[in-house]
Amino acid sequence: MSETNLKPIIITIVIGLILGGLILSWDKPGSYDDDHGEVANNLEDDEDELETGPKGGKLFTTDDFSVEVTIFEQGVEPQFRVYAYQNNKPLPPAEVKVAITLSRLGAPAQLFQFTAQGEYLLGDHIVEEPHSFEVAIAAELQGQTYHWSYDQIEARIEMSDEALHSTGIKINTAGPTTIKPTLQMPGVIAFNQHNIIRVVPRAPGIVIEVKKDLGQQVAEGDVLAVIESQILADMRSLYLAAQKRLVLARTTYEREKQLWEEKITAKQDYLAAQQLLSEAEITLDLAAAKLLSFGEDPQSITTIKNLTRYEVRAPISGLVITKAVARGQVIKEDSEIFTLADVSTMYANLTIYPKDLSVIKIDQEAVIKAASSDLESTGVVSYISALIDEQTRTAKARITLENPDGHWRAGMFINVALVTEEIEVPVAVSADALQTLFDWTVVFGRYGEYFEARPLELGRHDGSMVEVLEGLSAGEQYAAGNSFAIKAELGKAGASHDH
Image (tube, rainbow, N blue to C red; front, side, top):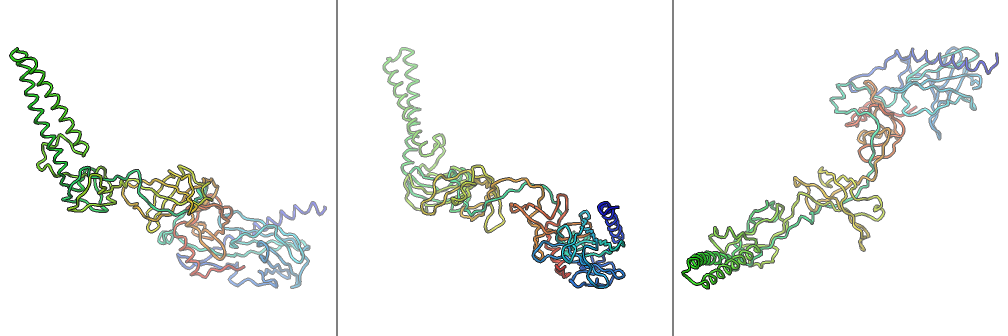
């Protein structure tokens, strides 16, 4: 039988021996000290430490045949290199056939096949981090097969469900999500300029009472100040006099009309009375119009006891943001004595640099956070200026914020995150799950009652979720909230990264 035909048969035999060794090795559970876990470094088949070979690797010997397994990673991606010895003397790599199977938590077994290269046998795959796995070795020399196994545990900790609950660690599942990259920029809260009302008295006079102060919240119709106005008193008096003249003119008209119809008086007297009635009606209408121009309701004049007193009332519900009035002050009819702002909506004003103008659009989503508190809200861009400021070389943008509870206040500094795009990704994890371990960025995968570090290659992020390019698959569970507690337990146990 040719060597070509023998090769598949030999490979099949080797794989069978490897799987047999794995089955035997699975019966050996690791031991841990307590609920919070004890990190195990190098769990072996025997209680004794594995022997170290000439190349610094793990040395396995049966009779006069030995293999040394190393993970070499100086200047290259981690790779298995196997050296063979007989009677403690190096064997040519081509005379030995080797296969290694790795079994990791939460992953299928991985088979490594080897080819001769220089003085060693080189594995055909990269040994991915972390180097935490069960290893089954099969080797063939001169028709005889040998197999060994060992455990190498790294960045792993056992934690029961009770310990998980007591430490507040939350478990999430990696999977598809929508990443929303954001553009970060500072801003400041300002009043909605369309909701600012300037209050004027409309009638000159002397201020005798001020009811509201700067910074107070007022309701529509609340009295802001009380003024004594001689001009307004004259207008009210004229209206009341016009009312009385109208009553008299109507009485005279009714009498003259009746006398004329009874042919007692001349028609001329009837027409004169009719003219006087029309003039009285016109005079009353003019007096009422003047009162309305002062914000007065003519129908309420008859109930007023002091004709000189005039109440200035709030035209809207809002906040008093300016006050320019005091008791005893003489004011004109156009004096701005109060300014009110309706704070049910506010503006978040942003400063936009020219390089960012291309990614900012009207109706773009944004998250607004207060710089000095945990206050947070959402909104959309409602305005982008068409001009660049000549001095600052920046443009302005604005977000309209709903503010029903009044928590947003003018002058507050804010940080704004504008959503620039929405990207569907197949695998993502929460940003608060990421930890730094050794020189890796990791999450701690959950496998039964074990956590084990999973180094990740990360992609795009939006501050909340992070895309995973390599290191974790969709459907795998990982520690999210309070994951730093796992890192702390690893530190207590003296976890190290050495091969």
